[in-house]
Amino acid sequence: MTPVPDNSAPTDNVRQFTVGEDDDGIRLDRWFKRNLPQIGFATVSRWARTGQIRVDGKRAKPEDRLETGQVLRVPPGGEDAPTARKTAPRTRTLSPEQIAEAKAMVIRETPSAIVLNKPPGLATQGGSKMTKHVDGLLDAFVTDEKTPRPRLVHRLDKDTSGVLLIARTPGSAASFSKRFASRSARKVYWALVVGHPDLAEGVIDAPLAKQPGTGGEKMHIDEEGGAAAKTRYRVVDHAGERAAWVELEPLTGRTHQLRVHMAAIGHPIVGDGKYGGPDAFLTGAVSRKMHLHARRLIISEPKAGEGTGGKLDVTADLPHHFAASMDVLGFDPGLSDASPLREEAPERSAEEKKQAARRHFKQARKETRAPRRARGAAAAKPKAKPKGPAAGRPKPKSPRK
Image (cartoon, rainbow, N blue to C red; front, side, top):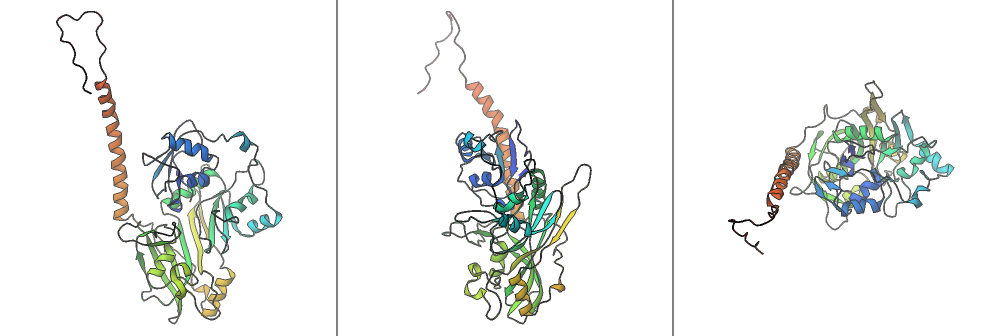
């Protein structure tokens, strides 16, 4: 997810951004590359070295990892790239095949958004050894020099298919980001899971943390030090005890949350060997691919002029392997319209409220201490020596060493 900016336009003022859920765990330098690509690594390093970049009021290093809700302070400027980069094209040149591939994913277009149905196996963003990804195909939607390059607003795992929202402009990206950060955006996933959950519906409340020794590539449940994570689920249908079709709605946005939570209750998503191991695969004609699909997204669009902005409600068709597995297991897609499982955005957990209160108290304490330190420094400043003889005055003592 792109950040939620308090002032995203380049000005002479300091800018502040709130780290979104989809940027949880990302390195600071990667955050800039993703959200402010016009600011180069050299500039980020210099700002960090001189203390101009602050995270929750503290100095930060390029390799530091960010957490959802943290406030990032970015100094003004930095958009002027080196001369060598000024001559580089604003967009990359795509082949006709790549342009066709990008446009084939489109399921809805509005003045503020492009909604894609991401196929399984295509990464949302590039990374180590990842050369093909959705972000690299977005230049297909840049028609001329005046058209801003579309921006990712959130992400889907490489093997997860379905609705992916792309913002057309920086302004719409900021607006959509606020919706995701406030949890007013409604996302409903369809999944096929191994076995049949005992409860027809419920909420999985299990904190998640990065699993040590995996380089942040795998998550696990950590009751002590994990970040709050909640998932609501509902069983739509089941094929005996072999498999079930469930709807999932994440109430938080942790990495691999749905996958870890379903595996944790003993019903891994079909095809998810990473968290379900060998038990995540069914025999017979059911595909071995991941069966997790972002079926529906409901989100408010930005206000245009004096308008109120409307609801963007999009449903993505199932990929071929998922639809085929539904047929094999006897599931009828018409049984559900993927309506949200909750009525309102969930209230923040007690732990989340505590963390927010701690951050607020910390910032308030810093603001209180600053004037005191300034007064103390002024009081400690030695007075100027009087000119000429100072009869009757004691000779000042030498300062202690």
